Image 1 (cartoon, rainbow, N blue to C red):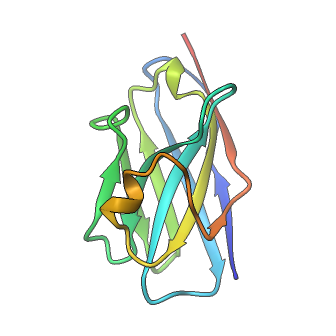
Image 2: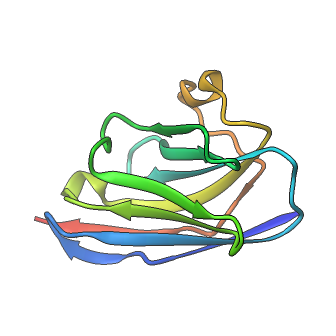
Length: 128
């Protein structure tokens, strides 16, 4: 079992920045994919960014490319999401999740969000 705890959400104005963190504990798999997804009211869940445990593979949603950066500290077992130039469209609950196995392009392009584990979420609100 893996436990994931997010933090760093909050309320910011359009154009502002936030940094989300996700601390993992519990089991460690040989190969896994860590990612962030978000859920906005009335909208489908959307994968935002993903990174393989070895850091060699990253994916970003088109809507956040150039603004968000995913990173990790494997020693601290912490995943980060640096969010810059925030827009009201970025408002939602952001979840940290883990998928056992690598970050595959075929998984990333799926519209549904599949994960083995996920955190409780942290609210991000961007006002105009």
